[in-house]
Amino acid sequence: METQKNKFGNWLKNSITARMLMVGILIIVLLIPLSYIQSLIVERSSRQESVVNEINQKWGNEVLLYGPILKVPYKTYTEKLLTNSETKKVTKETIEHTNYAYFFPEELNIESEINPEVKQRGIYKTSVYKSSIKLNGSYSKPNFNSIEANDKDILWEKATVIIKTSNLKGINNQVEIALNKHNYSFVPKYEQQDRNIYNKEVSMHKLETSYLDKEGLISKKGQLFSINLTISGSKQFKVIPIGRETDLNVKSNWKTANFIGEFLPLNNDKITDDGFNAKWKVLHINRPFSQEYFKHLPNLKEFAFGVNFMIPVDEYQKSERSAKYGFLVIALTFLVFFLIQSISKIPIHPFQYLMIGLALTMFYTLLISISEHSNFLKAYLIAGISVIGLIVLYSKSILKTFKFPLFIGVSLTALYTFIYVIIQLENYALLVGSIGLFTILALVMYASRKIDWSF
Image 1 (spheres, helix red, strand yellow):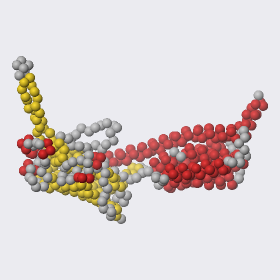
Image 2: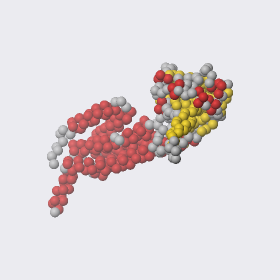
Image 3: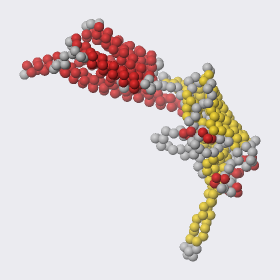
């Protein structure tokens, strides 16, 4: 019995197969703390997003403008057959309905000056802004020819102008429209919103004027209008190009401009030393919707365009991508120690492998914690140098020589550098990663060619 135990102990101590099994088991065990670290990164990213959203909600959310839109009610009629139960006589009853027609401006010129500032809560930052917006343009006489409505059925005296926006809270002035030499104030009109928790669309709120002057509205001449807005917002500023010709000009002192949406600025000199001055021109032929709608106003948010003022925070995304390579780092590091042990015959205890693996997992906790207070490159350098230095010093006490710890330090430095390069790349990440892994495989095959693999 003791002889069998001694044989089993010698097999565990001297067999390459036993060491390979031990290393494989330790790698699987270390996947547990790696999974917790990845969960920590997701949790911190969610925390950052919730804090930013809370700041933005208190200040004012993103601004999306849809309007001004001319709203004209009109009557339609349907006939219903009624049968008398006693005489069986059939009569016709005409039922009157009130519908609404919506007309977009012929010209829509929007000039906006937006100067964001950074708000901070704890370690989290977001950008908010105050904007001054001027809308000018003109309407032509509403055309009902497409539905063949009689002029007597058009309720010109009940026509209004509406604006839809995603941010009522941020409006800082009394909103009025100057139209046909009259001023009309906008008031909020409640509309039922879709409260589905899975609906990620921005909610739109409606502002509407009182009834417009009929005489000016039915004039054949173009009716000029102007609106002034001052809005506090965050994240983005976007407009929907509802004019037959829409011109947008946005000026800002924001240095990192990010233009978003269906249309991009036309001017090549939009980026300046002081910020940006972007200009758009969108014609009705450039968008797939018409100038008038009857009965229903369409949802055109997908055609909005503008500027994104959000502060890019990609430290969590980079940390998460880095943690996905944790299995590769641990496996390759253990492989280096395994090859050194097999070539030099220096014994390495499983506990020592475990300590080295835990040191490798500590890299990611250091990375995420330091990157929250600094940039990703600095955090990566500090975490990498700390972990590599710790492992080199620890391996010096195990291997008793300088050449093997030095080789381990160089290998880890090359591996972390390789992973950092992959993280920074987008279009060539797969190509570089494939070439790098092929090179690593070739080096391992070359280093292991003279090992005695006998059981």
